Amino acid sequence: MSVGAAGLLTSLPVLAFAIFGALAPAAARTIGAHRTTFMALIAVVVGLSLRAVVDHEALFLAFSMLALAGMAMANVLLPSLVRLHFPDRIGQVTALYTTALSVGLTAAIVLTVPVADALGGWRWGLGVWAIVALIAAAPWLGLLRHDIRTDGAVSERDVRFLDVARTRLGWAMVLFFGLQSLQAYAVFGWFATMWRDAGFSAAQAGGLVGVVAAMSIPLSLWAPPMVARPGDQRWVLYLVIGCYPVAYLGLIASPHRLALLWAMILGAALATFPIILVLIGLRTRTPGGTAALSGFTQSLGYLMAAVGPFGVGTLHEATGGWTVPLLVLTGLSLPLLGVAWYVGRPAALEDQLRAPAPT
Image 1 (cartoon, rainbow, N blue to C red):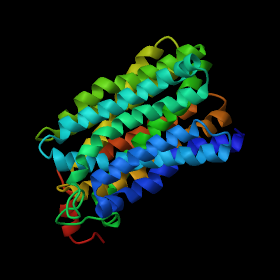
Image 2 (cartoon, helix red, strand yellow; image 1 turned 45 degrees about the horizontal axis):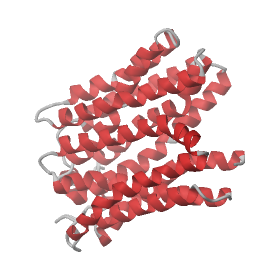
Image 3 (cartoon, rainbow, N blue to C red; image 1 turned 180 degrees about the vertical axis):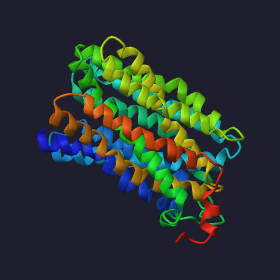
Image 4 (cartoon, rainbow, N blue to C red; image 1 turned 135 degrees about the horizontal axis):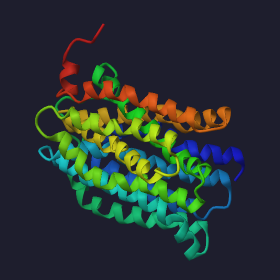
């Protein structure tokens, strides 16, 4: 691929989540949340399959975008489906599916290149994930019957995407999601390079990134149920967010000798992702409200996240080192504590919509 096409490819996830994530609640209102999720998964299957066989970079980009569009829409609707089917077990079910996301992320990091090497090329390394998507789509066939025009993501108060923009809670959730996603994009985009510069081999640097991803697996099981417990559970948010500055400052002080420790602590910090997903379900009363809040939060939040890898790369190039980028990431982690204080309080989106708009 050309340099421009490769750069566009790395930007497609953000564009897909911003555009198609915002469209997901409307699609769910029109044809039903389960049908939309099933069709989104089929888009993933088709996109991943076809991009592995084409020979033109424009087609590769187009089919990649199709797959990412499906991922974005399904990701936005999952919190509303949890609210619909498991209203009394939001924390536990969110823990299960965010753990599955963490397992998938770690597997993709660890297995894609070995699969490509074993089966004969990059096409197999990318295309094999279409099989995983097809397996994931199969159970949704049995859930399509749930979608009646008045069911699915529609509630007695049909909350829409732009309604969320009238609430402080909506913007606070965008800020929380955007700041934590910015950190994750920066980590997975640049930290392998940082560890290479610190003296590790390519395999060792990739292994440290794998440790970061793997740490989120057990924490994805622990954090959502803890946040969903009755009472004030903001201490969980503070504990997890506090791992960001510890890891970043530790990497400045000892990037090589204690790299494994800092990778583990940084992996713990990235548990902010399952936390924000469970908060989307907890801060709404209806599946429609959950879908609208999820679409608003994720579509705008991922636009913020795009600044992460671009900004870190620019700072690294300008300064010739990693101290300044790590200090900036440390500073950007601190506002998360203030936002956590607000979004961690018991509140409901629907209640703010009934209140007069703030002036």
